[in-house]
Amino acid sequence: MARMKFICDAERCIECNGCVTACKNEHEVPWGVNRRRVVTLNDGVPGEKSISVACMHCSDAPCMAVCPVNCFYKTDEGVVLHDKDVCIGCGYCSYACPFGAPQFPSQGTFGVRGKMDKCTFCAGGPEEHGSQAEFDKYGRNRLAEGKLPACAEMCSTKALLAGDGDVVSEIFRQRVVQRGKGAEVWGWGTAYGTAATKQGA
Amino acid sequence: MRKILLLSAMTAAMALTACGEKPQDKLGAGSDKPAAAGTGVAAFTAEGWKAGDQASWSNHLKARANYGMNDHQRAPK
Image: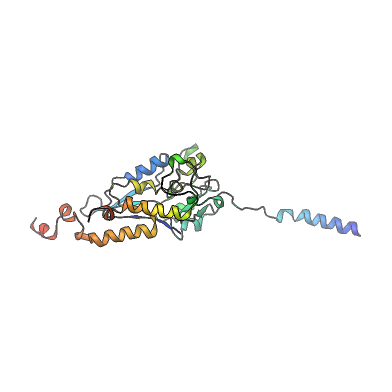
């Protein structure tokens, strides 16, 4: 049985935000809600690292553990989804999630916090697959269409990998073995200089 | 005597009504079908797999991930 996972390759991510745009476009996510975002560490400093972050579809998801109305469930493919008809918008999941995945739309009277919205691994929700109701509440169900999440498929450098954990970890392993790490990575010396050129500078 | 017993039983049943609990099973979440079932919308469905066949769906996604994301496999050796 497949267990769907994301991996973001920090050596490849160029902070283009293509994944964020692909996600927002694919699911027509409203303003103020970002199911995915790019986080950069040491921004502007040589050697900065960026990763694309969304719901990681945890095997032991803390959002599921704290939800008072038990609106979360895990699919056969290992994707953590939630039922918006059950969600009361309390925000406990937001505090519990270490990745900041749960998002809350703020439109409406006095900016009232609405039902939680998060990355679905492009797997829709509990509504009928491919239905308008599913699209309106959760976005497109690409998994049921035989496709992988739009963010990963649109990633220009293939930094973001998505799919069965066994498959993506093997792709990542193959990359790491071939390119090495740190200064061994192709292009590192060109971009940031080698130890020898730094001494001469 | 029988009337008193019946009346007291009815009174007790009425008094304890509030102690009951309505079923609180959630219906939505449990009704989600597996992704391999497909959407039934041919226009958006990727070709190369059969809806309802779990193995076919898994193999299709595996091939799609390798083709789309594994550039080491695609690049000429």
